[in-house]
Image (cartoon, rainbow, N blue to C red; front, top):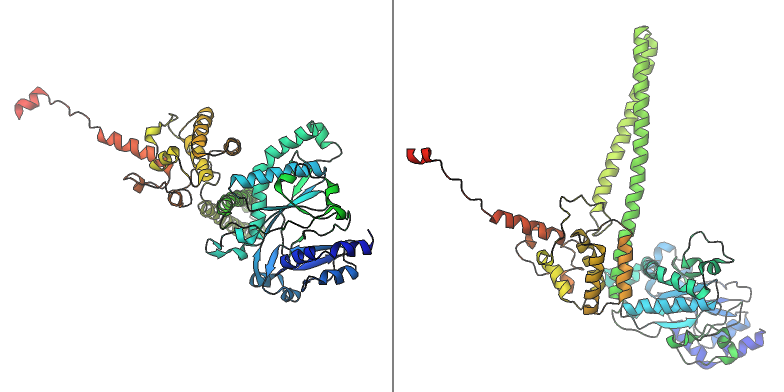
Amino acid sequence: MEQKEILKYYSNERLQKILWELAKDREFACRDAEGIYFKRPGMLHYPKDIISKVIEGAVSFHLSVERWRNVMDLENAKEKDYQELRKGWDWIIDIDSAKGLEFAKVTAEKVIEFLKSYGIKSYTVKFSGRRGFHLGISFENFPEEINFRKIELWYPELPRILSSFLREQIKEELLTKFCKLAGSVKDLIEGFEVSELSPYEFVEIEKDWGPRHLFRAPYSLHEKTYLVSVPIEEKEIKEFKEEFAKPERIKICLGFLDKAEENCMNELILDALHWWRNLEKEHFRLEIGKEIKRLDGEIKKLEAELKEKDEEYNQAFLKKDRERMERIEMEKRKIKQTLAWLKERKREKEIMMKKYAGKVDQAPLTLPSRKTKIKVREEFFAPCIKKILEGIEDGRKRSCFTLITYLRLCNWSWEEIEEKLAEWGKKVGLKESILKSQLRGHKKQKPLLPANCSNDLFYRDIGICQPDEICKKIKNPINYHLFLLKNLKKSIRKKPKKRSGKKAKQR
């Protein structure tokens, strides 16, 4: 594409205005035909500045996902200063297919289905300009703060977590759809060297966000394909073709990142953070476990060495070799000092693991074996669990987690749990695919505890915490039936023994 054609395309005043409006408080980066960026940071002061950038050699334009108080302050700023300079950020779900556009379409549709399951509708869609799509959710859709921390300070942590959570939740269904689209697993992996059978070997959803991350601006050309990164309606994804993105066919009508619904992201954020903290916690525990195992190996090795030194000392004593005895005694002292240090280090790690294990609810735990394997009937369920089963409006996904973990520890079979969840899902209007996804996840891991009673997100915040006298004595709903049975046993009084006739007469 020649420069005069590029100039003609970018001369559209409506296009210039859309880019200028979106570039407010963002880095505006230019890229030439070789894919090389102009000097950063850059700004777009006026709509007509786009033309001067093209004359300088720009082919494509890119925007930062972060919004800044003053973009040009970034020039001399260090990474540690970004938190103070940042005033917001948007979540861009970047889909890039190595398998062709059809696979990108399937992925985009699956992502949209996932967002809709959380009631999120204020997303915008555009073609990436090459082999994928971008879904954008603007900063205005997010809450002002999470855990008393302003939302702008959650970058890049939160978009990474959200993208990772999204990937994990749609992973299995996406792979099934890919196999169906390709015809078979064999056809799917043909031409690819795959380390594992994952949909992300073929279509990537960006998850490794970093400071000053850029995305291609809407209506920008792609410097390699010269196709336009054109915004489209959701309904257009299925029939979209690359030829629709040719510059001569573009109509400037739709915006990007221009939809907002206050606090619509809340439930997704809560679920994603909860999932991430459990993941982090389990990873931490595994790393600490490895360290304890390593220390244990070193301790055993030194203890064996100390035993050998004792034997050497005894032999030297029998031979009355005083010099050798002193040397061995010195070596033993060094070994004992090292042993004492290693044992203290091991003890610290074990304390650390125990302390960390209590920080987040519902992390994977090896639960103590229970004396009884009798199924707990519904009449003995905790009040909050009964309230969930009656039907709720808020926190349905969180409550799905609570029900699965609770019923599992009440010795219900998987068949019984699935039947109960299907019945409950219809009552509260929760999609069968969400229920099945959660069930699949739980079947792959050891039993988990429901959230502790103190976790307001799972009980008080969704209006199901209505404690009775037993609730005041327990920390987790799973203990409710145990206390109930204990109280019932206490209420049963044994009949007094009959006195013998002899003793009765004496009285």
